[in-house]
Length: 208
Image (cartoon, rainbow, N blue to C red; front, top):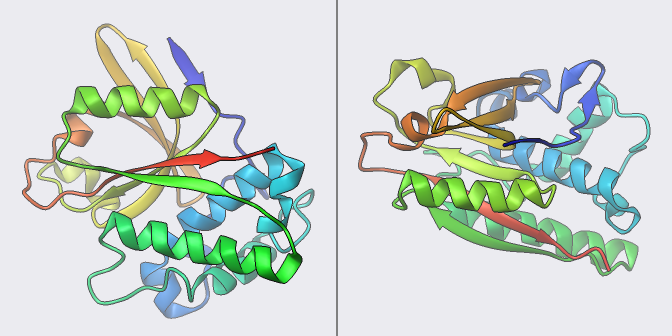
């Protein structure tokens, strides 16, 4: 079984990239804001009702507009000491952004959000991820610590899951971050070996 979202590109890159941010603070710690920006762009491309979530021309995505969008998102998910290290902070920030969009543009956009903490088993995470991606919904993922050095680029980092594949009794996940995609085995990726864990966010867009 394999599933990949019809994900967007920006000037040839797979989604957005916080390395484009010229603001130093955002360049270093803007991953939560970038993940929220990418989620908004994705939903805006999926459904006409969601388009106001992206304040620029969604039919012509550019790096410059994406950088400007990140600055709009910054107050809601601003980098801070220790990072946006709680799932609830991401939920609260994105909810406030959507609320402000609704007030400014007289829309009634609603995306339900539910936290799924990293204390769950990897099998439970696999079910969660499949349920979301099978509905064409990306999955925001927060990884805090990990004992495996192979994942050093994902330490203390927010990103999106945009696909999965089940093969030979294992499940592989596709990530979107830094304008690129990677594939990892979920069991090894999820079982961090560390006490401090992140988790996932269930997004439920209401298109009607």
